[in-house]
Image (cartoon, rainbow, N blue to C red; front, top):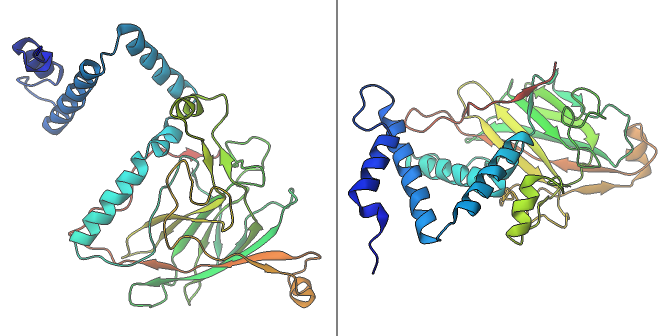
Length: 309
């Protein structure tokens, strides 16, 4: 049997030099990580007999991925973002933190700085026809105590699956708001039911998914950050029940406990009371936050976000 090149002194020395081993200065943890990642890449090239043309094709793909600004789209599509959530779930269990609303991925389409409202807000700008949605609920701690002054940061797609800022046809901060809960920890908003969306069909993310025999569709969903002093920040999203991709999300974000019932209201009196002339949808969903704990990893993730000018 041919000996693996990885076991030769020449390649071992090369990997050590790549990672900066033996060099003064630098980040020692990063050196170990780079050594592991590059070693695994070398092993992959060797085990699958990757040819130079295939390798440079992969490099060109990564370049296109960055140019298309789809790195944040492919990361959840490869399960990496869900894996980070699963690791955080496990770390909390080990720290004795149980319960609370399940977390799930943030995704790549958050925009910082949405307008802040007290108690309630209207998310849509009224320029789009769609099924009106009223959503409400309460933020509580693990003991059931309402959390007043919590901030519910909410964002979602329109009826075509587009997000404001990334979709130039929409007004600034359309379908994006921050809502501060009232004295009873309650929040309310009016919006329109969102649609699911798919990866750009001609983009590099979908190109890879197609090669893997996978689709790039997401079910309709609504994103949330929920935060309050002394509590662990929650990053989550609810899925709209009944969507064809509800349990077949390319981003692997569907989790038990995050699929609330969607109630269709067609009672004329209720329709009139809401100032509408057609049936509407209603969702009630409560968020349960865990108390902060010094022995658990933080839940505030430092990552780049778009900011609307």
